[in-house]
Image 1 (cartoon, rainbow, N blue to C red):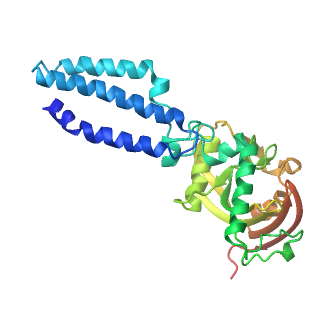
Image 2 (tube, rainbow, N blue to C red):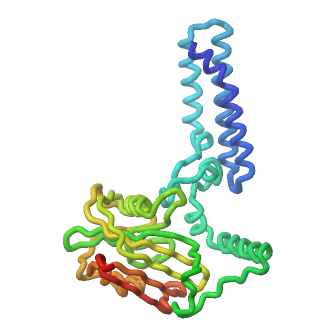
Image 3 (cartoon, rainbow, N blue to C red):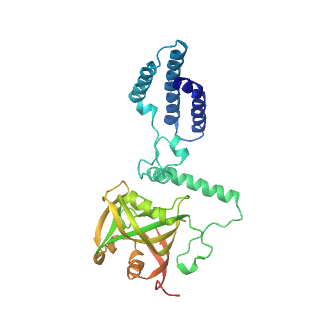
Length: 311
């Protein structure tokens, strides 16, 4: 009975894999994964031939285990060719979207791919910018001023939304050494991008676990930061304080976490803006900060703060 069901549904499984193969042809740098689907089809066909032979010749269905064993053995022997797929980025371990699961042989998320191929990323962004200008000739390109006052923050549209989370444990706060990406070489707090399908709170918990190995419990949003960089990058960040955690502290490809005394924060190794707003947040006040940066150099800033329970 089981073999008959496998035989009846085999064609549907084969059609699905062939559709995936056709989709892979449209995705760049996907030759290895495209040939992997052909390997999978070949092994499935071998199992189907064995299944049909057993049914037609009316052999004992236990022979199907031998056929399955041969197919599994082939899959293991040629595993590098049969299964190059991953669900998460091999660098930052973020969940990959469907196209990056079935395509893109390097198994990198777009951000990590750009970090490994800076020249290609720069060329692509220049082409996208040129295309944007061609499609919208009346749209004025963003001209980043040198002062906060010159920016129209009411109509400002950041290119990225992110989170920053400080975990406190007694007199200590958890910080990270940034090993790659924006802020490489500086000390910061764990954080990162807010994905399209998640809230800022969810992103704060996810990014914290990915960068430190710890699961945080209590979250409190303390402020917001608006960064505009001279190269066009705009970031809007939500700052969180956290208390209570579980798990074991662990280093990852992007960060090295470490505990630091609250009274001895290494501001000389941190972003220039941190020493302006972090003491305000640690004093119990809420805040908003606006900043103009050129690379890692702060050009201008404005900070607003108020008591948490103020009207």
